[in-house]
Amino acid sequence: MLPGVGVFGTGSTSRVLVPLLQAEGFEVHALWGRSEEEAGCLAKELGIPFHTSRSDDVLLHQDVDLVCIYIPPSMTRQIAVKALGIGKNVVCEKAATAVDFFKMVTAARYYPQLLSIVGNTLRFLPAFVAMRQLLVEGYVGDVQVCDVRVYGPSLLDQSYGWTCEELMGGGGLHTVGSAIIDLLSHLTGARAQRVHGLLRTFVQQNGSIRGIRRVTSDDFCFFQMLMGGPGSGSGTGSSGVCCTVTLNFNMPGSFVHEVMIVGSTGRLVARGTELYGQRNGCNGEELLLGDSGWVGPEVREMPLPHLRGLSSMVTALRQSFQAHEERRCWAHGPVAMAPTFEDGLYVQTVVEAVKRSSCSGEWECVEIMTQEPDPNHNLCEALQRNKN
Image (cartoon, rainbow, N blue to C red; front, side, top):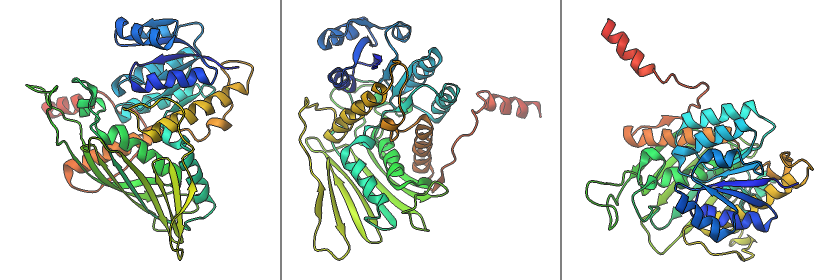
């Protein structure tokens, strides 16, 4: 039985997500927005019977058993942890910090019977599903190099908001790079051990963001990852995997999304929503999976790979819940490829290591948090110094 859904957020993702949920048979009972007016307008547009600007009204709604959280990263942890504590299944976007993700991981471990996944839709894109299967089957041999390029227009909102602030989770690295980091680990079965990165903010002000306000989030990012370790997949070489990622959001009117994986016997390349491959010794690439065409609405703010991936993820959610009579119960199989909160913690740890590297100019190690840091640690150190 499909659960009733409550959606947090009124941005472009929520505008696409709600119709996709409804098309798969989910009933969306409640919508949260930052203001009553904002929530009311979108609820009326999408045919959602209840809207509010108070989070508890959605979380405590008697018909809501699945909560979809697509709000600014700095707010994600608070809603996700509370939702799990109340007994709701959770699908959410990324959090703002590794500490936030650690708290989400702790909550998910307390309630293992509840669904708790991060909505990285690229894992569900058919091109990457096929790429992962071909990697397992040995199409490229031992994986050696991953090269990713994502170019597109600015990620900034029309007015000053969280997308402009690096500390609030804005910027290309956090918004898009985190999805790429997760995807590469998913495809190769390996995790980053050391990283080196460079972040820049070329557009610090524009027509709508001026005066004393300046953009601090990055619009260009280049980083490298050395991947390997105990989590390395069977198709990974003994020396690990070298990854390079370039993100450039200073190209209005264009969009490039290319993921290439090179191995000892061939290569695979996902361009947009299509998958190409070439074995060593062959004259050219072969089309392994074409674009079957998108029949849903076009959304300017959401690139086609993410749009198609979101649609496939919603289908997987329907298959997962449909397998059980009880509306809060779900089957693991259809959503097995979805990233867990533990995966989210790893990805955020890599993101923060890349930021440190951009400041230090050095390679930085990726060390995943195993316990929550003491919030009073710096204060205690200061008091101890004064005492001495």
